[in-house]
Image 1 (tube, rainbow, N blue to C red):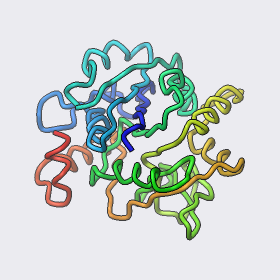
Image 2 (cartoon, one colour):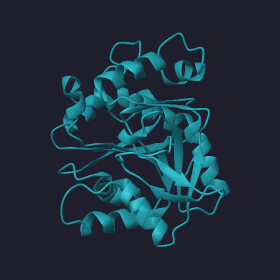
Image 3 (tube, one colour):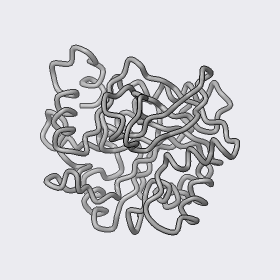
Image 4 (tube, rainbow, N blue to C red):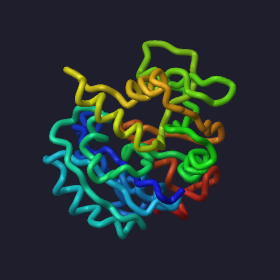
Length: 256
């Protein structure tokens, strides 16, 4: 489980949270200066992941490096890769591929907060106990049209991912993802082949399903997932991780 390397995409423009640029450094915890990205780094460390790659843009690189350093504060070794332009998550994977070096990867978005924090550990257990190439961690949500709902069959095989659909009856979203080297290669091929726009990771997951990779789901029905990349979302995330912590006390003790 601990052989996986964390991947955090932090090269986006952050226009939804422009008042807190770069959004990854927006204050989250009760201690002054606790950054939003620190939650993702801490969640990986709590699951036993020892290394993480933060993919940065040239404009934000010096700020993120100055705040995160080598990751000692968060209990994980932080490395950096640069994405020249924000061209979507498949291109993030392509940019990080030389450092990933064929390892298993666990992706945690640096502008999200979830509870309980052990969902990353549960995802890694699921990956270890299946022969899957990709495992999507699915969270319940009341707002799937803003996120990426996923349909699965009775054996937890992923059927289709719908990225920000106009309408859907599916009430979940992927929030964390684990994959093997085959999916890293597929992301690189998809990013390179795309002629315009920003391909999504959901697009590549659908390609993986249709080309025969084994794509499984782990459903976190007892979990809470918060997209903290908007002003309302950041306020909700701050409420989730600050006392009182009656529902999920482990976040306060492990993350802050």
